[in-house]
Image 1 (cartoon, rainbow, N blue to C red):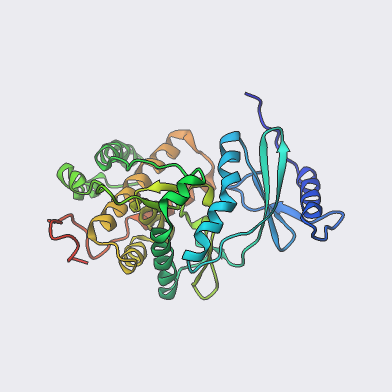
Image 2 (cartoon, rainbow, N blue to C red; image 1 turned 90 degrees about the vertical axis):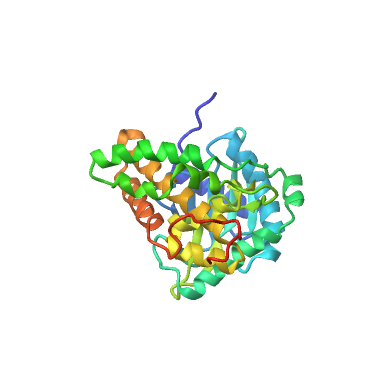
Length: 315
């Protein structure tokens, strides 16, 4: 498998100029380009004030991003937040896609706090995703993914928590709230699959200075599957209480809310333990993972798994 070249600013500048010309937009001879973030590395670049250029690092990502504009068009009428619009696309290396999208206003949820009104935007996002016809998404190539086993994730988190305890990062006793019977009780219910964004990280939520959620990025990771995964994503992006409030406003009851909460908590423990073990050693990455762990473990009113047979009256 051929190693993709590392793009330079000059490479990105030439690509941006070509794509802008192909789209019919006015292109400066030397457009201003700069990396979007340290975490994105060389794969995402700002182009001037109005565009973002993304470079797919492999063929799998290229395939997902080829369907992304059509998926965004399918989702757009159902959600109350803005989605990027494709301006032009091409290849930046053999078989590797590059896309030039409109840049949406706002900072990320890592930079701005989502307000109470912003939580209604998140609720509208979850509601809208539920309304998108799953079959139409699948005809675009969006895969259907089976729900994860919360019990298997709980066991992995227990092992990771012991490693974090040795590093004085986490008290493994906090995981006692999720017993094996509780994990079984919170298994995903059949017939609940919907379109799931599947990457609702803070970096993909654009938030205005007023705390409103203005846009959502990162649609190439979407699947048809467990809606609790998006609740989990919001828990690490904006905090567990805000995620549960948004999901409740969207009509989700206690079971998917608690399932999403524990997916987020177990994931956060596992990811930080893996990073500290040397699998992701960059300091900014560790800071972000610690922040996500803290957000996921923020207490909510409904902390313990109780009898859910009467469905979600507790919320």
